[in-house]
Image (cartoon, rainbow over all chains, first blue to last red; front, top):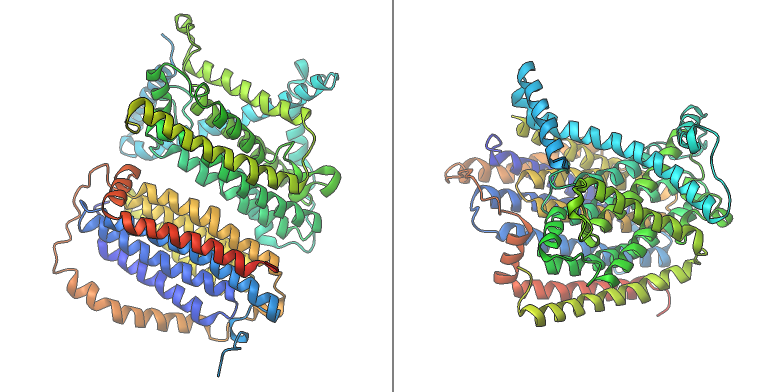
Length: 104
Length: 356
Length: 167
């Protein structure tokens, strides 16, 4: 455990976050966009845990916060999937670009 | 005295001596888990073969038939013959399948259930990896089977398989809730998630949890039967409605993997039931003087619970989909929640504080 | 030594699965890759002494969220024309994004962090265990925890209202 520097975890989290951002920006399919968001959330979780483990190992705020993030992610996924089903029912498509009713 | 712990110590002593001879003592931390996992795999393979034979004998007995009796003594080698037949059979694949998911699904279904065996304590100290979050681990790792079954049904490109996959996923998710809720009172009382820790608690308390938690035991067994997709909850693979459900399009080795996975799921949930409710490796009360090793007790209780689950299959008619969902959500889950509240109240009144 | 090798294997698997998630046109394949990525993440959490969280990660994500996602993908039965390939030249944009991210993050990585004493001390065996995380959560973070239960309730009701055809 001692052999892995903290920075490597941070690099990994940054790369995963980049992959997630790319997924959100480049995909048209709403479900893929959702999966990109989940990747970003998980990248943040790596950072929380790595800092909790390496910096202040008497404080467990990092793991507790990760529990909160996972809970919010679950709630978010449920609502987002319901919205996707609703959009598909009205527009017969799951492309985020086509759902532009509110564009001025 | 012969106990499981002594055997493990003996074997590990021999192994470490062998490492020292070969000059790889530093790698013991890597090799030991691999060896124990392989031993567990061998045990499971033989045990499941025995279970398939046992299931056929039990069903034959309940239907006044004889059952397999041709291959080997009492037909014991019938399963071996079946396994050989399955492996050398032609692997028929649908043309329009989704290639990669179709290939991965049986492997995931098999591995996920097998991983559950890793934390089961067969005797004091006889466990591949004694995690301190054992129960949670089993619940989590068997959750992968849902994904395997869904992808199997989807990638077969067959409407019956897809329907079976959907039904199965809905069923497993619903019954997982009541399964977890039925375990919660035990965790509240013992204050630990480790399976060995729960058995130790029962040893100190002097009773098995089936006595105060009979409701939880019944809910657990019912939900476990549903989780393993076995009759009377076998609508995902109801032969008369869906041909074969999610494994309609699977044959040969891939089908064997689903089949093995189903039996291992039965073994895992029965083993958890034995550990939580029937005292694991503890001997029957007043029979301590026999000095029967703990793992023998464990296996005896395991076979008893498995026999119970097998007997369900031949005594109850299959439920309809809506009846199944109603039973899960409107009966089992409310009862288990009430059970949790009742346990909390009773334990608080008895001891004035939570588990220690 | 073994841990280092394991870390790099897990990290490579994580990034590889992550790339598969966003590059596959077949959403089922993306979802499967996502499950693989979560398994890798669970391994990383376990390496960071957070065994409880690694189990929770598998339980919630692989057992819950991904099943939901796969269910919706199958329910919508997206036609191939819904699944157009990405218009951007994949890896060029990806490299650009990673470059931008590195430009933002690198000052922190190279200046802030090395100046602090990031000692990798020996943690107590209780670190990240269920008991310690639970004690912390119910002692110091009880109010956010209760708020979370409200959030979950709202999400359940909202999802039901949104997805139901007729109320």
